[in-house]
Image (cartoon, rainbow, N blue to C red; front, side, top):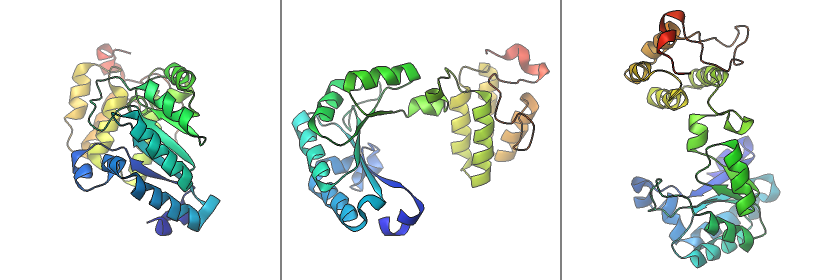
Length: 245
């Protein structure tokens, strides 16, 4: 796989953290947390062949026993990994349970390669607090950025310009409809009326969703003046009374 894609990317992430049951049953994702030797061999094989020409990241979750995680990260560090991303939950921990930043902090202190903290980052201020507490070199956000792609730019909610840019990119590169709809739903949650939000989620095709946006919002296209620059939601006049901006 690396031989196929390395000319087109600067880095490759080896995901050992995905807890989805189907992935685990196939022996990938979080299942790899039980096979540090295999993960280390993969990292070593890539680094021996490509060296600094490709950046290799290993994304992990923590074990119940932190000593297992320390052993894991030390092995991939010795294999030549460039940096490690640590999600502060085990593969069986529900997302409603807070991430364990104490374990992430211990892992950061156990290796010399850069470590990125993952879990429960929902704002720029939160990212700074996580970085300060754990001592990590970076902070990764998933749900926070799903709801607000401009989070790290300091925006509290997804600006309309980000939604316009998302529309342009997703339709240009062919994102599957349900994924496109899901992302828009996350970005607009709490920014439009519940009635309008439900109506948006009820659409069953790309065409109907585009028509919905054009009917209810001023959605600019790539070559329109001011494309991707607006902050507030530009509802059309007939729907503005329903907004909760």
